[in-house]
Amino acid sequence: MDVLFAGWSLCGVRSEWSGGLGLGLWQGSHDGVEGKWLRWYDADGNWVMTSQERLLLIERADRERQRADMLAAKLRELGIDVEEII
Image (cartoon, rainbow, N blue to C red; front, side, top):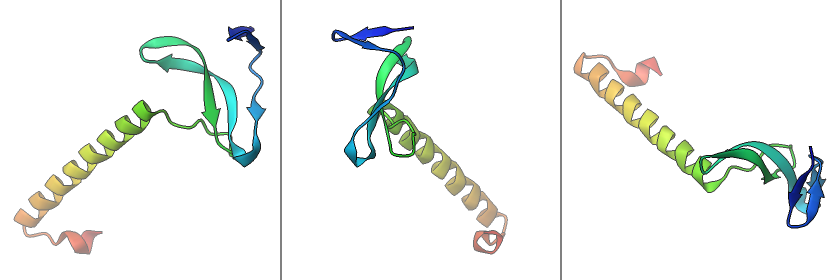
C-alpha cells in the first residue's frame, strides 16, 4: 500500500543516508493513533526510540531498581548478605 507524505509516495522502502541513519515506514501506534509512520532507524536496522519510548524505558528501569532495592533491604532484615548472593 502506498502512503502519501508531503507529496511523496512511499511504498515501505527504506532509504539510507550516510552516518548509518535511515528513514523507513513503520507500522504502529504513536500518540494513540494507529497507522504507518516515517521513523528513523540505525545502521543495524533497529528503529530509533522516540522520546516517549525512552521516557517509558527510563521509568520502567527506575521502578525495577526501586523494587530490587526494596528486596535487598528485606533480605538484609532477614540476615542475608545480599552481596554474597550476587
